[in-house]
Every structure is written in C-alpha cells, then in structure tokens.
Image (tube, rainbow, N blue to C red; front, top):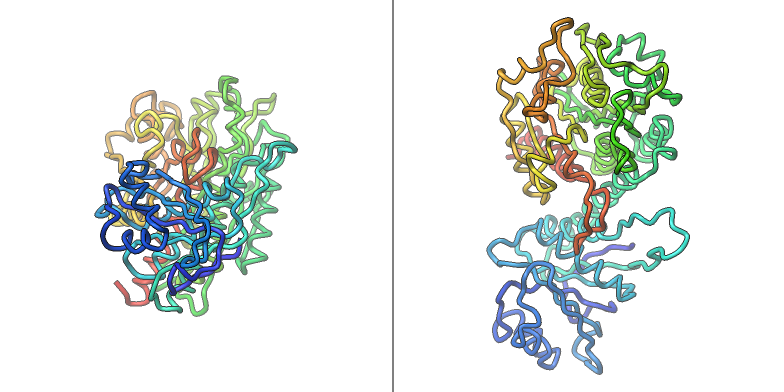
Length: 505
C-alpha cells in the first residue's frame, strides 16, 4: 500500500472514497459537518438526524455521491469515534483501521482519511498510518480458497494546512511502525512446523541484513559454554536445536558507558506442548504463538533499525521448542542457570521463565543496564486482567511508569501488579535455590518474582502478554489472531529515551 500525506482540502483529493470521523452526538448544522453536508447535498444531515449514525465508536455509514462535482471522491464512509474530549491518537488510529477494513470490504482501492484529530501533524499522521497498516493483516496466509485478495493500493492522510515536512515524517514513521507490527503478527501466526528456532533465527537474520542491525546467533554448544543450563533444560525433549538470537542497533557515536544500554528480551518458545507436564489437547494448536515475546523483539528492532534513534538498543531472544520425549527434563529435576543459581523444575510447562532467566543474564553480560522482557508467560494473567490489559511488574518504578505512559500513547493498556518481597517466599525450594513455580496463588506475580532473581543490578520491567498477544475475536479495526501488542509501546520507549539523551523533555 502506497501512503502519502496531503495538507490541502479533502474536497480535492482524487481517491475513490473518503473516510471521515464523526463525534458522538455531533450535529450536522454547524462547523465541519455543516460544510460537508453542503457539498454532499444534505446527505450527511439526513444520516445524522435519522440517527442512522450517532457517532459511537466504530459505527459506520457508507454513502455514494452520484453526480456531485464539488468533491472528487464519489463515496464517503462516516466513522463514529466517540466523545470528542476523549478522542486521542490511539482512537484516531482505530478510526483509520475501521475505515480501511470497511472500505476494503467494498473493494475500494484508494482512500483518503480525515481523522479530525487536533495536534502535531507528524503524530496524527503517524497514528493514522499505523492503524491503517494494522487493519490490513489477515490470518489466511495458508488458505487456497475464500482468501481475502482485495487490496488498498493508495492511502492519503489529509490534514488541512499541516506543515509538509511534518506530514511526510509522520506518514513514514507510521508506515515503518505499522509494517513492523505486522511482521510480529506474521511470525506469531506461523505454525510450529514453519517457525522452528532455526527458522526464527533465519527470519531475524533477514531483518538484520535489511535494516543494518548486527546479529549473533548462539547455538547449543555456545550456550553450553556460557553455562545456560536453565535454557538448555527446556530444549532437551525436542529434535529441533535451540537458538539464542542477539540483535543490536548501534547509532553513530553511541556512548554506552555514559547513557547505558537498553535491552529487550523476548520469550521464543516456537511450540509449547508443556513438556512432560503435558498441556490438555484442547486449543494446544494456539501454542504456536508462545514465541510472541521474541517476535515482538524482532518487530521492534526492525522499526528501530529504520527510525535510527540516537541510543543503542539490544534485542535478545531465546528460542526453543518444549516437547516431551525420553530425553526431556522431568518434574523434580534440578538445573543450573548461567548465573550459577540452581532451579528445581516443579512443572515443565513453566518453561518460559527458565529460558528468560539465562537470556536476561546474557543481556546483562553484554552490557545491558535497563531490561524490558516480554513473554506469553502465564495463564494466570488472563484470569486477572482478561484480554484488555497487559501485566507489567518490575524493580524500577520510573521504567514501569514510562511503559504505562508510552502504552497509553500507543493505545496499548498496561496494568501494574505488585512484586513485594513476600511473593519470593513462594518460589523457595527445599533442595535448590529456587523452584520454577510458586503454587496456584498469584501465579503471574510469582513468575515475575522468579525472573527478578536474574535481573539484580539493572533497571528491569517484565510484561506478561499471555492475555493480550492473541485476540479470539475480530475488532472493527483488526482481524482476530495475533495482535502485535507491545511493539508500538517499545518503540515509543526508545523514542522517549533518545529524546532524554539528546537533551529534550
């Protein structure tokens, strides 16, 4: 899809359809809608007064304008966006996604979007383009029939009177981020047979080559040399070798000694059967997405390589399958992590924390001073927060607050859970230093308490995306399936950190 910005009037845009935001209970007899109503011959007023459109979020009305010479587009999609005072960049992004999905369903090839969001042109246009790209992703990659073949060929973001440079920068940023989120979603959607640790490393290498990132992939022999017994214990049951992917973006004149090194660490279990502690068969096919944390890191690093912030960023992705076999780790086994800490494995289905432990330790070895890890880690997080909020826990309140604020900008919700020292008592082992589960109570928190054992000495935050990484139902602005949650938030974290480094606020 070709994307561009326009700072002229929406009346003059040569596209097949216009998508225009309408606020809740907005009247057609004043302001913007009054002007639109005049050029459409009273159609807009008719729709609103008949209450066919009340302006509620994601409501749409599709109109044909036959024989109208005052406006180049001959079709209009009115999109409800809710209360005017609650309308933010995140809502504008969803409005754009709703418009793109609705108009693609009408076989429209070219669209102009008038989001009516006030603010900086670069931020508004970026949000609109992000949402438009996210709307295009579909699950049907491997269908041979009934596949969505319709495409949007051209998208124009219209902000009347905007600075041309700001508009261009925003459109480009939105394209980069939107495409990168969809890369994450595509990785998460791949069947386990097509997304083994080796294939995931190959996909990461392709991203690194295309966008000038450095990459190092540790094989099992190197992991053994590093003492990563926790990570390697998970891969024993599989015929597929584990990989530890290390991506790095380094800007010119980077001073890690002065400014530190931010690292993203993502769980990459390419298929999770639970190991010897076998999961129930129902819905096990969805465990292909247990590598979404790692896919999130790849997507974020892909965008960072193009956006070129002024700070270095490290991405570490431990990849393995978790399968049962005669060689698999058994409940009751004791394994030794890279740090030397011993772990009693109570449940082999609590494997994500085992691989993250060594990945966090390795990120620290590579110089990371601030670490954000993300993982589809616990079923308990869905019980606590459903599919609305991602859980965030950690040791650095400033970093947690940054994540929540950045998420709000991106339209991604994070909710902080406590991590008091009392929770660590639940993971104390009788025969080893710690155990990998702490019982049924506070499962998301005790999983984070386990990871905390390996994040000492650095600023650290943990994102449990198990409830938000996959959407069981389609939204008006997004297909069902992988959501790409946290990619946009992580990119904003980097942008904020770079701004501080450059002396901004």
